[in-house]
Length: 121
Image (cartoon, rainbow, N blue to C red; front, side):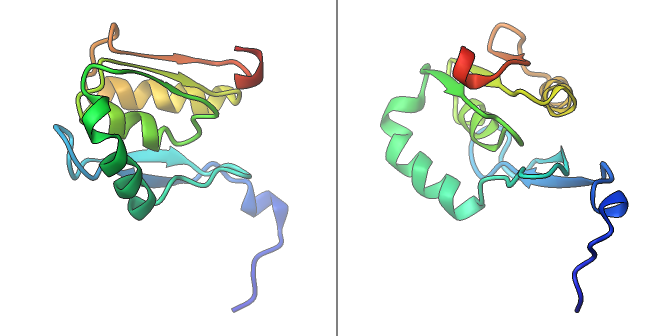
C-alpha cells in the first residue's frame, strides 16, 4: 500500500488514543491529537518502566518533559503519583492534555500542564 504523501491530508488534526494500563484509571482510553513527531509511548514500554518505578511512584512528584500524548504522566497519576507536571511546547497538544485531565476529573492540585519548552523550564 502506498503511503499518502499529500501534506494537506497528512497534517489534519485527526485523533488517535492512548490507553492507561494500570492503576485507578486502568483501561481508560484518552484522545491524542495526531501531530508530526508525536509518537505515544507504547504499552509494553510503559509497563516495563512502571514495573521498575513501582516502589517509588506512590506520592512522588513527577515531571513529564516533552509530554506529547501525556502517556507517562497519566500512567503515573493513575498509579497514585502525588503530583505530575506536564511540559509541552505545542499549544494545541497542551490544551488536549488539559482536556484529558478534566475528563479524568483529576484534582488541579495534583496535575498541571505548562505550555513551555522543556529545555527552558
